Structure formats: C-alpha cells, structure tokens
Image (tube, rainbow, N blue to C red; front, top):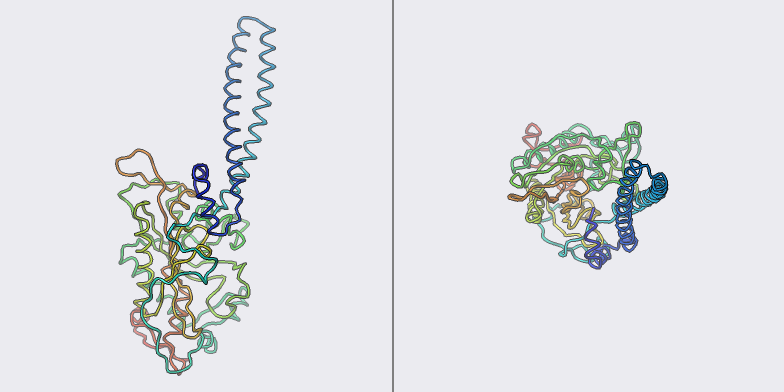
Length: 426
C-alpha cells in the first residue's frame, strides 16, 4: 500500500507512475476522498471541543441553579451531539471508500523499470550457459513422463480435478531431491530456513498484497476462514508483521519450502498440458527484509541466489527485467529468470525476483528502528522463487533427456538420490 501523503504532496508524480502501469485507479477520487476525510476530521474535532466546553458550562449552571441557562446549554449540546454523530458516520463512510481504493492501488515503479505494455517489451539483462546440443528431436516433458507413469494427470484429476498431478517413483524422488538441494544451497549462503503454515488468515493475505486484489485466485477454507497459500512468500513476509526490528538485525534472509495452491482463474486455456501451470505445486521461496538504502543491492543478491541453483544444475537460462506493463501489483521492480526448455523450444519463467520496497511493510506494519534514532521507519521487503520445483523438474527432464527416453540425473542431485545417475524408462 502506498503512503497517502505521497498522493497529497506529489499528486502529478503518482499519477504519472500509475499511467506507466496502465492502471485504471481513479486517483482524483482518492485525492478528493482524502481531502473530504481531513475536512471532516477537522470539523469533528471542532464540534467535540465545542461540546466539551458547553458540557462544563452545563455543570456550572446546574451548580448555580440557573435553570434557563441549563436548558439552553443542554439544547445546544444535544444539537452538537447529533451533528457529531452525523460527522462520525460521514467519516466512517469516507474512510471505507478511501481504503477500498487505496488497497487496490499498485506499487509505484522504480524509475529504472523500462516502459512497455506487456511481456513482449521486457528487456534482456544477461544469460548463462548454452542450449543443450541434442542430436535428436527433443520431446516435451509430458511426452517423456506420461507414457511411463512418471507423472499421472488422469489420476490427479480423479483424486481432485484437472490441473492436479501425481508423480511417481524416481520422478517423485527427484522432486524431493530438488527441494533438499535448493534448501541446502540457500542455507549454506546465509538464508535461515523456516517451516511455515500452509493455511493463513486474511490479515496475512492482506499484508503480502494477495488480498483483496487477487482474492479470486485463492482457495478459501470457509469454515475456518483460512486461505491456502498461493506462495511461501505469504507466511514468510508475515513472520514480522506488526513488529519492529533493530537496524543491526537487517538484512534478514529467509528460505522455506511449501506446497502452493492457486485457482489460476485467469489462465484457462494456457499451458493445459504438462506441469507448468498446476493448481497445486511445490516451491522453495526466498524472502528478504532490508533497509531502504540497501534493498536494491539485496535484489541483485536475490537474483544471484535464484540463478545459482540453475548454474549448479547446468541449465541454460536468461535474466530479464519486466517492463512497466508486466510488473506485478506489489512490486517496484522485478527480474524474471527464464530457463530454456528444448521440448518446447522456448524460455519459461522459473523464478520471479521482486523488490516491493515498503509496499508490504505498510500493509503489514513491519518497521525497523534506525540506529541512533527514536522514530521507527518502514523497511523494505523482497521475494523470489528459489526455485519453482515443478518447473525445475520440467527443465531437467527436457534438458537431460536421452534419445532412448531415459533421463540423466544432474551431478549435484545424485547424492540426494542414492547415487542414481540415470532414470530409465519403466
């Protein structure tokens, strides 16, 4: 959530930044509601003060026995009470309308974000490695896995519904190996591992920016009023909700694994085959808490943490910076890491690393105390996948596939798989 004072003091700047996003937010209405709210508060305070003064005079009139003055003052107080009640109702209504608009205003983009309408205008940053030189026609991962039972989409749909899958045997084992490898790598590089709830309350969804903006994408357990998390980012960001952290504790880096659940309400017709877009998937997440002065250095570190996994797996990938029209709701700047998939002859996103600056911190009241100061400030939060497990599995299957249908096991995963070097057709 952006600071309302920024709209008051730099209206034209905020309007320009929202135009860069093609945002449909009516900023003028926001400004007018804010002005109405402030005017109402001023009038309300004046009426309350006036009522307080008259109440004292009523007490004095009662003591002196001046009945006429007592009745006159009582009538004025009653009138003021009605006016105060009306102002309070107006204030409640104005604040409700204002907050409904404020919580749906996207974060303001960093000035370095390139302008553009959609993903076609994202900008290349760098790449690592080379595309594998396969001397045969590569297959999509589902054509490799499904015939052998490595993944079973039909039984996944039988158990739940479409876009759920069952993985089996050494493919399931590789998923588990990837999770352990990723967590071990990140904790060795200074991240603190956390095991978090998969169900969270609405306050947690709000703080992370998932609610109310993306409520249609969420799975809600209505009986308990809890949501299944769409990403491990949600519980990790909320670890320090409503807390004040000392500056010398920053930066804080957390990593955690969880299953993630998304309705994918706006993506029907996209990636209907395979493991790319599932309602339930597994992900290792990275979250950082930083001072404002160091958050963009931490964003670079976050990207390095994500790409280090792909480098260790020897998977060709590239880094792009998202343009204004493709940057997510809560982010000021986002880098996507895209891995090469030979079977699809395309790059696919495998990690999205974002700096949210103080957007989530304001929503979740997460602050820090600068050294030598008494006033607390909102810190900056960052998040990124480190990595999406299912998509990493897909990348391994397609990049390490052999002509006979077997799959080589990347060297770094072999210790996690009991020394297994190849997954053969079953």
